[in-house]
Figure 1 (spheres, rainbow, N blue to C red):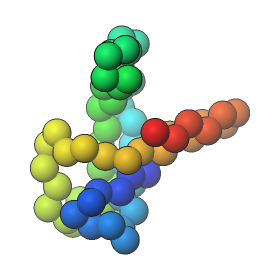
Figure 2: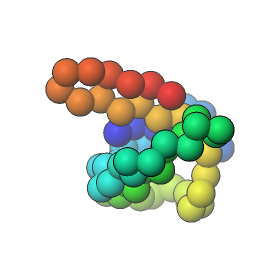
Figure 3: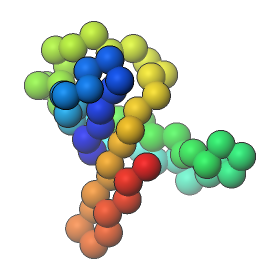
Figure 4: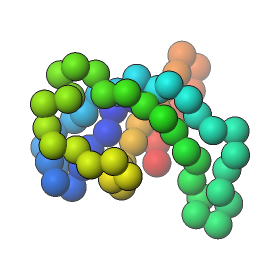
Length: 65
């Protein structure tokens, strides 16, 4: 997956998805995703729990939130 942070607006970070929760929070319109940063994205100071703009793409469908 790729994502951006407000702290680094011109940088695209890359991560590998480890787990997507099967539970959807309908009130928050969110789902919990566990991901591991790729080596090149580990250089910046990122905090756990940061709000992210994320794009998840698989072979047949693209989702953006």
